[in-house]
Length: 153
Image 1 (spheres, rainbow, N blue to C red):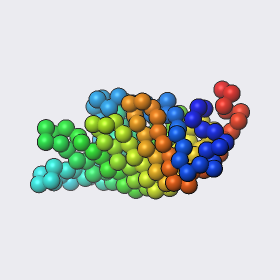
Image 2: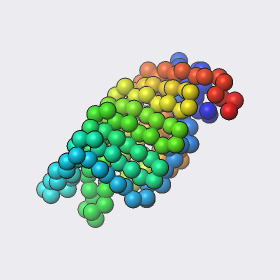
Image 3: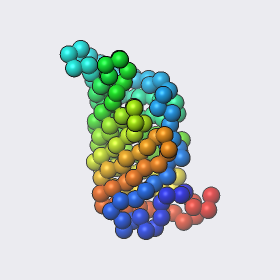
């Protein structure tokens, strides 16, 4: 696995490769949930209960997601809260919150972030993922579990 090294455990910030999280942000976004509340005044919608968002191969689940729309009616941002899980390919990231900005194709995950890539794990307080390039940065007392045998695969 490129991007994770034993030295990352000592770093305050670590660059990470996200081959599985590379994503085309222009693909349609599908949202399912137990309930939906729409606020016409501020152009937002709040999905609650077993929220699942899909875009291409990427899946994001959370307890609650607030969707902000732009002036043309497209999605601007999605703010996921509570038991956030982002999965794509063989990679998964967990956090307390996540903000997905569609225009910049970026996801910022915060609060007790854990990223797993195969047998390797990386944790920190903030994970910023650039979905267009498939790269990211983990910050905030970064630690890692590095499995040398998986690096040979």
